[in-house]
Amino acid sequence: MSTLESEKQVTGWAARDPSGVLSPYSYTLRSTGPEDVVIKVWYCGVCHTDIHQLKNHLGMSNYPMVPGHEVVGEVTEVGSHVKKFKVGDTIGVGLIVGCCRTCGPCKSNIEQYCNKRIWSYNDVYVDGKPTQGGFASSLVVDQKFAVKIPERLAPEQAAPLLCAGVTVYSPLRHFGLKRSGLRGAILGLGGVGHMGVKIAKAMGHHVTVISSSDKKREEALDHLGADAYLVSSDVSKMQEAADSLDYILDTVPAHHPLEPYLSLLKVDGKIVMMGVISEPLQFVSPMIMLGRRTITGTFIGSMEETQEMLEFCAEKGLKSMIEIVKMDYVNEALERLEKNDVRYRFVVDVAGSNLNEKSSV
Ligand SMILES: [Zn+2]
Ligand SMILES: [Zn+2]
Image (cartoon, rainbow, N blue to C red; front, side, top):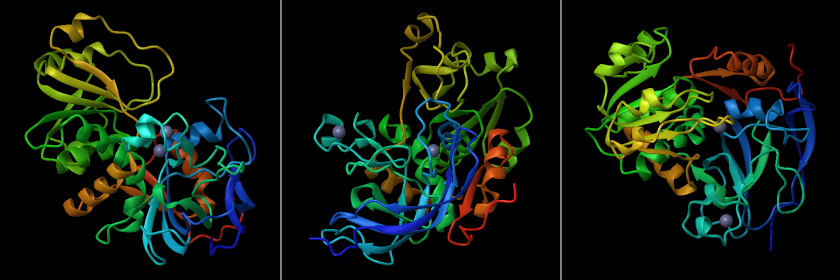
């Protein structure tokens, strides 16, 4: 039995075609049920994946598309079976809003690896309606796919943690690297990379940022708190750093050779891929054999890990670096993000924006 109205009219900002330009769009939320919560959206982060979806880079985009998968807001209604949340709670929603609940990954509470996962936008929900994301006044979500935002975390700060944050937290935790004294490196310093530095430092690691140029040295060392900076084209410095790292989080979403980085790993060291690269990567087998090194990849984190990561960040007082913008700036924000012209995450102040007001861009 549900106490919720069946459908609600909401305003979001949607792309209508692969130009990816967002503008106001009115639609109804899917029918709500006993396990669902309705959220009034406060903030939503802007992620690189949003650009790929909006511009149909993967060839699977459906329009109109309301993006946004780093959503933080307030619970305004709960279904009759909802135990996890109550009205007024601050909660978050990430990349996934559904799974099959019967497969191996689902039963092991790693639902992000369920082959029937439902994306929070550009997908079809179990009721046959398109899913729409967080650049909207409200959304409805099954309680399983929402997390509680700890009181000590500012809601706008929490938004980038829901995708970028858990993406780096999950492999460190899963591979037993969430302990102090390790030496790690972050390859690539964008939205995910900057979170990697912050979270690895909070775990007590010695953190090296590896970049293709010297441009971000001061930023990495002085502003993000990294311990070392390595330019990948500096052959002698790369040789000096050989066999020194327990892990590398590789956040670069473009084709690049793996050998130079594999050689930096200690015995049993791991390189964890987290950028989407569609071209095949190459390496010679001795690079992994002579050092028992691992090349692996992970994808966001489970709901359990997401909740744990939020508590961890709250406890450590971790702050992401964000630029808060209104919705009528979102098209410009997307353009700037595409050029990597942001330190490091745009977060849209959704509740503070007039969603019916068109962008001037
Ligand atoms: Zn994302
Ligand atoms: Zn499943």
